[in-house]
Length: 157
Image (cartoon, rainbow, N blue to C red; front, side, top):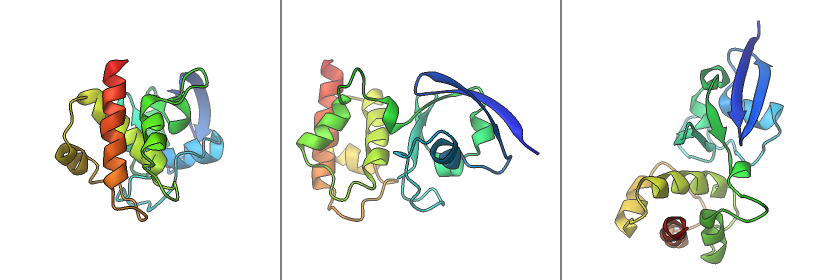
């Protein structure tokens, strides 16, 4: 048995048939080939699969694709505009807020949602709010710097 779902992904209308048990992360990666959304833990602990669902950061390994029917989904592939990095992506690059890069898409997606809620963030707030995104390579120092810089850049323009 398959279900027909219709949603908007990165600004484009998508209609697809999915099995009822397919997770949103699997749908994005396997059916839409949007592989920037990573599968890290399958238990909503690491945040590597973070996307925006109707403007909110969610862990896409923790929601069925069918639950996104009618929603607007934005992945890491959808935040750059006209060939220009999103301000948060640019800040991660400038501050070297990554090492291996595996967690980076989820971090950036969480950070953009956080900065959209409050551009005047403190280091403590960033550390607290990114608690659900794990990086196994860094001490988070450059990630926090990147989020603060990215938030200011988003506020500016």
